[in-house]
Length: 330
Image (cartoon, rainbow, N blue to C red; front, side):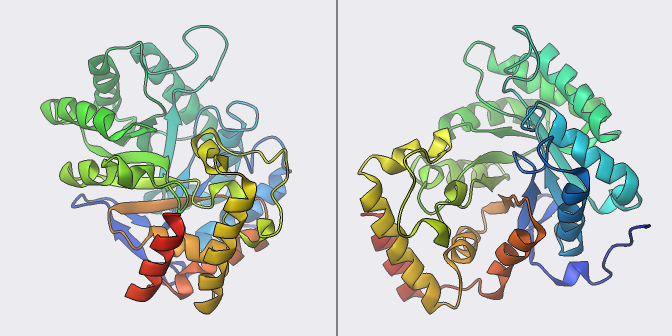
């Protein structure tokens, strides 16, 4: 069956400009971190990706190591792109990253010039693309001169393989340092993709949001639901073997009971807003215009549809924000 996109797709979600650049993103982007690689039947993955596009999500986020097996998430997206989405390429913002372990040997990770260039070439091949819209250095490289990483990203733009570049998991100080080099090179730096959610507010506390704003860039928030903690699934109990992301390990520092109490207090506010906790968590991130987009994932269409109801109520009263802040600061 030939796919035809929903003609009303751009009426379903809000969009936002990334700082004062020409790039516009949907309020939420679709990430393929661990949901739609080699562990899922292709037809299921196709259904979720196309539902996302029909719902107004035109930004798709990948990485060279996403899968679970390295590269398989890009292969999955590439299959759907070639068969269904290729006619819509000019509407799509397709992003990928490189830096975590991608292939055997010492050159298969981090941000040296050879590694970044080779990784993007592989990504383009897997997805069947001539270029990506944003290419990110996926993590800080403590062993490679920052100038080399910046110049490698600049080269990739000059080669026409990416329109914009970004970094991921960089602190405020690290971001400030590389943006200085990008400014000198004239590289179109667009943002930093970091873990940011109601429970993990490092981006606020270390000044990253301010640094990005000062450099005409935006924050791309991944992990907006703290790997599922900010849903109604864990209001009574958090399993002992809960697979928390490394960026959110600190959430358990005061014990799981304290975290459960915080989640229930937040859930009560969400219910008062006519939302699920997950929907309120997404809306809360988007209250700050410096957040360019929020990356969500889903392995089932119904999960995606449920999360997208966040846009039914994006406004917070001053009283709600004050109450939320008090809960989060405990």
